[in-house]
Image 1 (cartoon, rainbow, N blue to C red):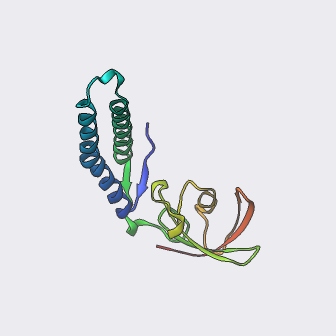
Image 2 (cartoon, helix red, strand yellow):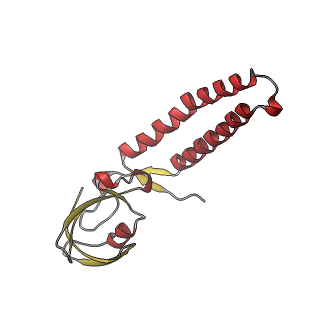
Image 3 (cartoon, rainbow, N blue to C red):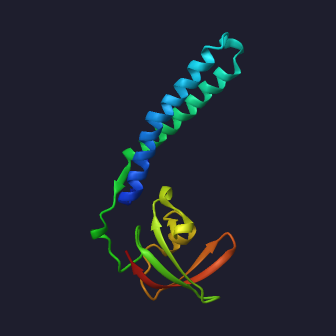
Length: 157
């Protein structure tokens, strides 16, 4: 059984838009490429035709994966999120205990993660270590660069 993933309204809309784009423009483009390649003659020796058919297979695979993802997607109701502890969609302000650097992350679904926007996947090592923690708690998290100790300063939406 596929895993259920939780999304923000924005994240879910982005997935639906991408799926729609692939189903409409993507399929139209591939059909055009196949038709053009077919018009060039003998299909048994036509590399363009083979490439277009491969591209079609990849597109259909991507569409299929997105459909499965959306079938198992759930919209998170922000009004039901408990900000007394770290959970998906909460914004967490942390202090690195070693260098006193302050960082802020929002925990989101894997597909919505974007470190430049401060959005990290709930499946990332840092997020996994933070889940369930409360303000004032310290947590030691193992990351690829070693162990980092954080103190949870604030939890909000």
